[in-house]
Image (cartoon, rainbow, N blue to C red; front, side):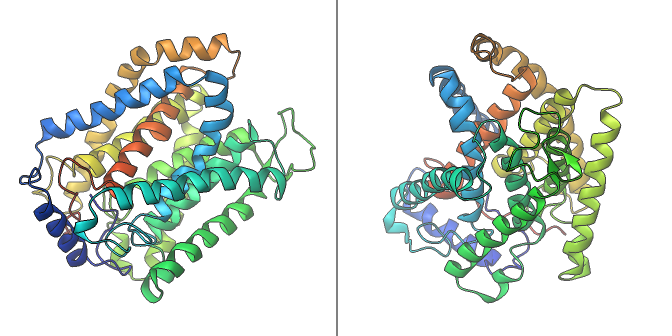
Length: 382
């Protein structure tokens, strides 16, 4: 499934469909759209790979270096995907790619760029600005980067660059906008209540870092719910025109994120609220839209499609929570033995979003979902 809604931002639905058709014709094994059972197996394979990575990578390295750095991998995946750069420089639909290039050029080429971002990002924030340690401060900076990336791609549709600029300008300009907004939002954070309170890199803003983390995770739930390619497909905001629809969408997502976070804290522990519940909803939105293509609600138009999508994703999130309670036990035991400050809820959300979602999106966008045919564009909302 391409990360593109209604063709507003320069990558047309027809163009993506053409890319999908060309690539489908290229692969003889890609004759039919995969069924829901095949897609379930596809997800299970990436769950298995992700579990193995979590179990076999040394725990300290994984949780104190690789996972905080992976926020930059999530940033890179979105920047190089169709929503922002149009797949430039290596992947379809706007990159230097033809069906004869197969999957390795866009797959390996873009993966190298994403890994480069995951190396350069922490080096910059650790040594240039704001000069903080990757662990644990990188998590607090990283969630701002992640939320801003999704906000720019899902809510703002890469506006205004995607309407007017080349793929390269969209890529670098979009990345610059995301990083600038991240740096500005970082000034809202304070590190009170942490060992880093009052450090030179403490912005001393109005919102405590761990509270702000949970708030942003809940805001991401709504950014994805009203995104251009997931759940409600930006209904009803696309009716308002640019940039008024994007402004309204932003306000609604922030307000709903604040309500969900503050109300849930009256009944749930913080990590169960943001990591188990909100993190699982984010994962299910991603999997249901990007892997399963809104199954089985394509026959409906928005907002009925979105309501059915959202209710299904919430129900699946609680199944996911129960499943990960079992699957994550060996990982949680390793984390506890290492003395790291991550409970079962946080381990589960890192598995869901920083491994399963990250790997499936990379494979979907850049390795063109091989051996299945590339995902086609989502249907129009109405």
